[in-house]
Amino acid sequence: MREIVLDTETTGFEPAEGHRLVEIGAVELFNHVPTGRTYHQYINPERAMPAEAFAVHGLGDDFLKDKPRFAEVAQAFLDFISDARLVIHNAAFDMKFLNAELAWARLPPIPMERALDTLAVARRKFPGSPATLDALCRRFGIDNSAREKHGALLDSELLAEVYLELTGGRQPDFALSVVEQDAGRNQLDIVWRPAPRPVPLAPRLTPTEAEAHRAFVAGLGEGAIWLRFDG
Figure 1 (cartoon, rainbow, N blue to C red):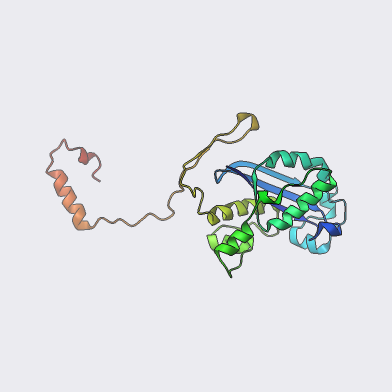
Figure 2: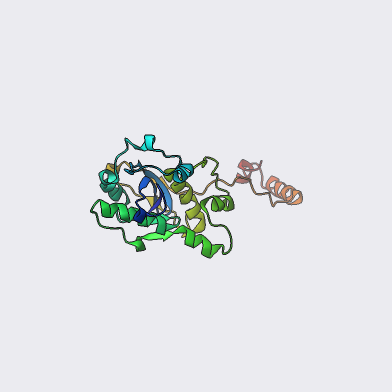
């Protein structure tokens, strides 16, 4: 199953009030495994950046003035997400901006049912607990130290890690699946393997049991295969 973990940055809260997208970041997953494919685009909002929004993401007028307008990159964005499910934190916010921009570009909207809202998932799973992206990173031990300001690609990468934890880890169905990629799309072949345990498990073999085993192996003679493994 192909999924796109997505985040946006904007000039404000409401497209109906003239606010626009300024950044889109997205990460591709296949069967809950990152493929290495990402999408990242800064966008000229064709308006001044409010100070409140600049304080959140640090994207100012001088930086954005030579970036493409949304209509110029819309098809590339749509091609990247294709028909995949979209994984978004507070999906209603990002979807209303994406669909407003698509409407202004005279393109069809993205159906809301394609979006999975990780904010709603987190609130159901941890009722009464903070469910911001930063709070969830802390809960799951995900390093977000690089997140000095909001950034769409960094936030989508962090959200991908949070999403995998919310759904039970990198392989919730225990299907050790291979990402089969089309070489023409320059994607990566990835075979999922479990990460090494950060701290080895303590040995369960007692000294008495270890000595009994060595005595048993010694009694088997010099040709015993166990001697190859007896440290």
